Length: 563
Image 1 (cartoon, one colour):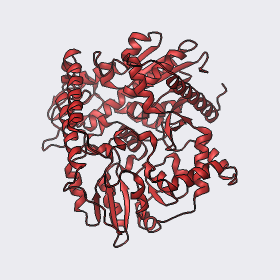
Image 2 (cartoon, one colour; image 1 turned 120 degrees about the vertical axis):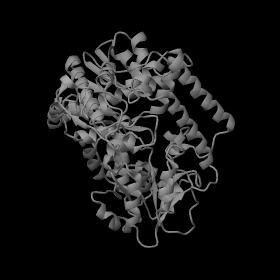
Image 3 (cartoon, rainbow, N blue to C red; image 1 turned 135 degrees about the vertical axis):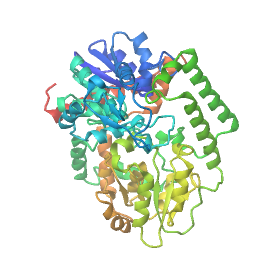
Image 4 (cartoon, rainbow, N blue to C red; image 1 turned 45 degrees about the horizontal axis):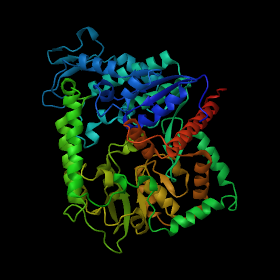
């Protein structure tokens, strides 16, 4: 492993995604100053339990040379400062007034007025200084904790605007203080979800601190170093794509062959999804179902009673989700998933020969959508807009995401089915995306993999956010909903093979084959003494090391920094 020398390295850590980083931190701390910043409230504040024993407690107990930061202090402050906040939600029949900026009266409730601890002048200053990519309201969209009204995970409490603003304020102060104290030469990450990462992107950009995380290219296991928390397409990727686009067919022959082979395959699902819920089309046996639910009960018993975290959960349900709601959610999801994978009265089969546009839904909440498609996460509204835009006689085929099956409310499905030219199709009618794509006129997705697959098959699609594979010809990013009828009418085949080959070559030139799910699972098994460090895991760590080195060089180039 090449490693770094004499650098100040800050790892951003959250739950399962932090586990591979622990092994890198163990290597890097030999020749560098290393710190880890844990950003998840529950993970930082809970006593040691099954949930966090192989994440933050691995650093606390087995890697004490690494300086540790977390958000526990602001979690406690948040709870304390809002403990006297009225329980009544502002949208109720008798709302209260909120007054900002009077910290001496913060937490008091007098004459129907609540004096908020939010420093609105500070946030106004922050919005002026740290919104290179998104304003503060859009930044709040990056966490499922602050967006309950957009998703179906009811174990999270609804939060009002005042509560969201205070959480935003505290996190900005925390992120800035960590960066100012540790003064990292680089910030290394393994994911893009949650508010703190969105804040880090803004602050690091302003301070010109290289911040590198993982972007999924959709081509095999290849990952691209992302310099701005996967927002947009990095300049170095665009430049390499344009360079490859100017190459001859002979120079891109390997990618041409890959595309022709892809078009001949019966199954095109990305191998990275094998063994995950995204690739599951059959229901579990009753034995598997019972084992999973028993595992959940054991997990939460350990968390609440063995580790004595139940009392903390009662202090603030906005930060620490209630166990009973979790269990009820998992039970409901499993029951409904089993029902919906059988023949049912919600989903219907496609009609042979029918003209349709294919729209696969997303996992909600999901960082890909909440961060990259923030304006379009209301999928019901999006379905309505697309249905209005179809040529007469065409249908919109809406297919649920496998990982979302059982999680989305039945009421959502009923509303979709009320739209006269929409079919909510059976999720496992086919066990691969290809038949859905090839039988459709075209594909519409927020930022989904299906658009990438559609392009490789030489067909046009529509997306609503920007991801690397939108470089390929045939994928159109919607800028105005009024353009939808024209774009849909223009669906069809396209001679885009050179553009696709140039994109794949770009990914191969710049990317690194990192199996994220394997790395997280194997890291956990090694920490739990269920496996040993083997050649495959070491090889993946070395690939991750090279990934961060490459990302740092790209960041240096962007910021004009000399190493």
